[in-house]
Length: 366
Ligand code: EPU
Image (cartoon, rainbow, N blue to C red):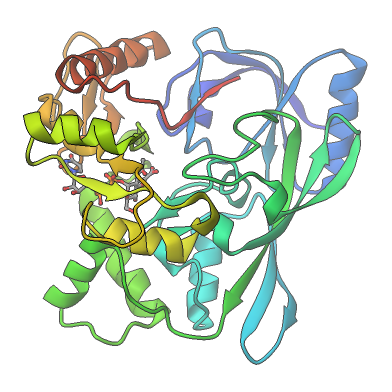
């Protein structure tokens, strides 16, 4: 086993910050995962599994344990019928390669999730979502090493507690499961509108009326190019805050003070997933028949109103992206303390103006 010692973690987060890992090793098979977990257990060391580090903020203290970098490859077809195809992808595979593969085969289900950075294994952790689609709605099951039971297990989608940008892997069972593969069911049909507002606008502006998975992927790619910096060029973790979900009463209170505030009916708990979100996110609050009182409001809009769009903070070396205030960027920060200090400036100002406490989206590990 090739286990490295005292490894600089900034190379393992697209925010490029963090201390050192006591030990770090790559695993390209389930057997290697198991052997590495056993190695750590014999030394009473904790274990964390990561992919590309696209959604990870490491602490300056580093990690006094073993980090396993998931490199398990592969995309294979498990079954296929007239209407759908079920595939399994190794957790170390680059997520966008799986999307590209599916779109080439004219399959629908994950084309809205095009160009999301990172690996397959990270996708279920924060239930990746974009343009009205969420991983949770196409995921059938996943394979993981359960560090409580010391064996590989299969978890069905309904047992993953998927919700907006979260799952059991990020909450109650944080750190327990080392995800090694996911199974997705994709359909052999074109996606149907209603689509997410900005996506529909793009399609209309470009006179694209043939809603094929390929056309949707191309549109999402173009929109993302403007809104989100490429992490290989500009250090960032994508959206740094989640969009808060608040009560109707609170939304009305905010609307009185800020008539331009944007809100969408938050999806019903039992209607989560692609269709529920697509309907919810398309309708500006009040226009829809399905509102259950909860409203999802735009964190990006609030951060922009708070004066933090295209900001370059000299004190911390951090900033926000010109195309979206929701994306924090590391321009020349040296430590995670710098990042947290800049984040605090944003959180405090937004709280002062709106009375809303923003929550961090990327995981602060361990
Ligand atoms: N907005 C602003 N100013 C900004 C950014 C956004 O006013 O600086 C407004 C927009 O005008 C729009 C609303 O906020 O009215 C929503 O903006 P957008 O559609 O760009 O989406 P978002 O809320 O900024 C979310 C996801 C993204 C995802 C997009 C598209 C979260 C935390 N973020 O961003 O996901 O790509 O929707 O579906 O839910 C990520 O998680 O890393 C990520 C990039």
